[in-house]
Length: 345
Image (cartoon, rainbow, N blue to C red; front, side, top):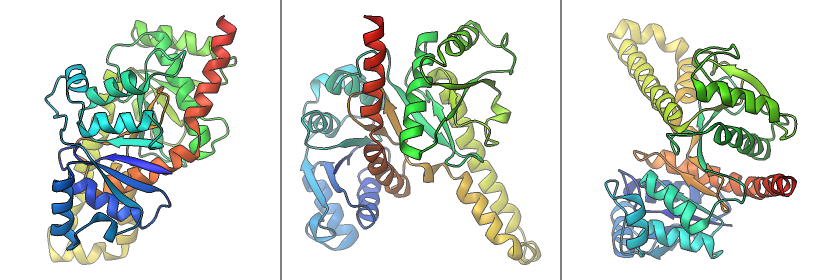
């Protein structure tokens, strides 16, 4: 298996991508191909590890040269069309042509979605691909949020397809037999929410059996993290607000705990017996360990890492990418939507 990594994408690139790749290379069986300016990457390798070539660090690391990069402020469609030798476009081209099995980038989200749709292509029958982000929860593997920001304006059909895609992904990646799918809403009653929520509720409920969706109804944000739901379906605008709120609360709790426990020597001493439990909680609440977010609905596996990702996020995302490919979720999605296309025809 070959994992393609956009070495130049993200706020902390290429330092974080290189360090994350070196960490992951020691623990996964796949080859990791860093795509970006070869001179810059090699100089960083020399600075960080004192080696002349990345292959000197591990035989499953290599570089694919790309002379351009897509910036965060670039217009997505224009950047994809004009920057042919950017690390992102080169990565998509390699993925499409079978030179890699999965592509990871922390770069411009709009460009990544545009590139995945235009260069790789959507699965036939899927109206819009979406970002599936994993959040901390009491569930076995966490809580999947779908869509986490790709589509700010949605139709009920989109949310129905989000429910179906996420159900296939969770089942094949984590082995959960019948993932519980909930619709993010302001209340649990069928009549709650705006027009999109109410219409989506009715559509998902109507199609649940036919599309093999274990739909449990509306779920409020306050009840989402208690382990009673595996997937939260939402439009990308609402989902992205929830995602960033969770990240912010996690940082606040971590800072508050640290400040409280280190305020004075007595508090620090008294907290020592509870440190294992505190550290376990901090780890579980750390969104970085959940890695990146798959773009579900495109013909090949694509993962979006957060723009501010550090080396730890890339480390976990690379491990996640290997599992994503092994789970064959994209192939399963293609098969399921082909069945639906045949019914419609």
